[in-house]
Length: 79
Image 1 (tube, rainbow, N blue to C red):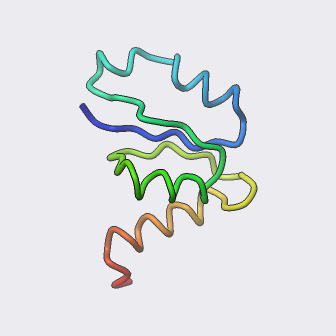
Image 2: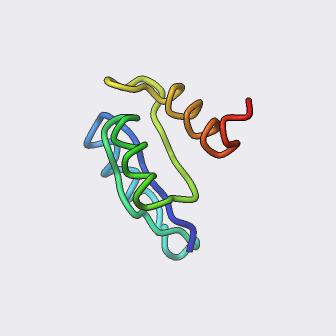
């Protein structure tokens, strides 16, 4: 199973994405959902998802900054 994290500041969007498809049938497991990029970083450090589905416009840390941080961490900050 591919571990998935959903990141969106809208609770209803997160719940809709969870119910959109039968994730498990497709080989995915939603291991969590959080409401901003800062929470996503903390969650990722603990749970190591393999796929992150993120909104772009969020408070605290937006999706663009989250993606930048994920890339930096995965490359060992060699950018």
